[in-house]
Amino acid sequence: MLQDTDLAFDQKHIWHPYTSMTKPLPTYPVKSAKGVHIQLDNGQNLIDGMSSWWCAIHGYNHPTLNEAIERQIRQMSHVMFGGITHEPAIRLCQKLVEITPSQLEKVFLCDSGSVSVEVAIKMALQYWHSLGKPQKSRLMTVRKGYHGDTFGAMSVCDPVGGMHHIFSQFLPQQIFIDQPVSSFGESLHPQDEENLRKAFEQHHHETAAFILEPVVQGTGGMRMYAPEFLNRLSALCNEYEVLLIFDEIATGFGRTGKLFATEHTQIQPDIMCLGKALTGGTMTMATTLATEKVAVTISEGEAGVFMHGPTFMANPLACSVALASLELLETTNWQTKVLNIESQLKQNLTPLLEAPQVKDVRVLGAIGVVECHQNIHVGEIQKFFVKEHQVWIRPFRNLIYIMPPYIIQPEELKKLCTAIQESLLFNNHFTQN
Image 1 (tube, rainbow, N blue to C red):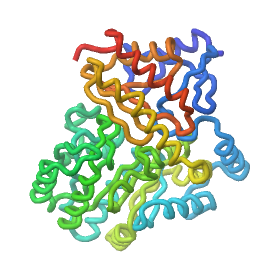
Image 2: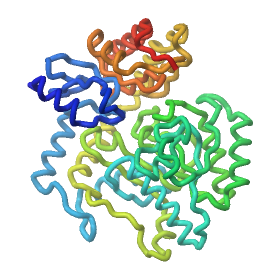
Image 3: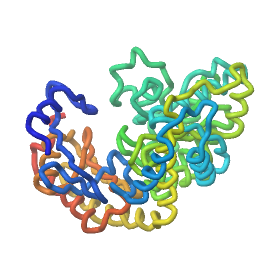
Image 4: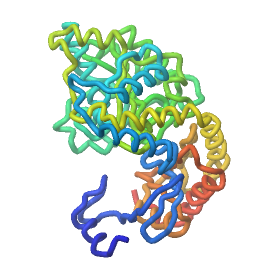
């Protein structure tokens, strides 16, 4: 068991994500995790509503995933991927080509979601350079998006309200249009179509690709918008010769009720980024898939190769557990589980629209969002969740949201929703905007 001195060291020396070193948020020592439960060092069990930032879709300590890692580590934990290949990488890529949109035939294995986005951006830039159009060197995207914390990815995150605006002087200046106003389930609003058309008419000559999160904007605001926006976007990309990149790092592998969010549309992207749930939350891994046209054009260009190669690319441990996670999805009826979660989230969260603190409630697949009028005091509300309700929920800005593992049971999901409901009753859970 960790001692007070250990926790003091953690607070003084260890920089946790999005946390101040002078006014750090409380941290809760974890001893183990199994199923949908996180066991704290003091023996307290918390129901996990976050899937460890959306990736542990099968829950924790799953025997199938553990066995895949154990089996692989007895053979090799890692070999370089330059000039070498191995069965875990081949089998994983075969499965990814099989289950992703049909025109995505080429697979680049990455270290993390942010790297996957960097790779996608580099593919788009190198594609147009290979075609003798280096002037097509900017990215177009929508506001309120989020694509990661590395510099290329930051450049296509929301430039004002996002987490990275303080780096704006150092980032490439990309092209932003207003985020869709058409909500999921609605037809395309004329304003959205006008915004798209105007942006393409003005910037297509300098635009390499349009990148966005399909259907659900994640950390930029947990907004769910009309798939028809993507259908129209794809048509304009084809008309004006702009590549289309879908960032499915958060939405992939069933989270929106479809295996991939692009399945809510009638289109396919030129490049697609995957990550998070790829390994079922066991190890870091991501991938960038591209069409034959993109891959061949890059390969026949000036460089003759794609200019990227991470050291831990195609790590055999990660490949093995990713393949096991995908096979687990196929054999555990994830569609019914996600549909049941969606139904219960709507039933339990929609009534919160009556609360004076609540601005909106949104549900899609295994995603439930309560948007408040005021920002959340994360430290205070998490203390309430842990101490009073034994649940793990991490809000941000003015959003209290949950993305639970697919294996969560109705009574466990009910506890998460009840905790959110009761958290709205206390003024100290909110900051003054």
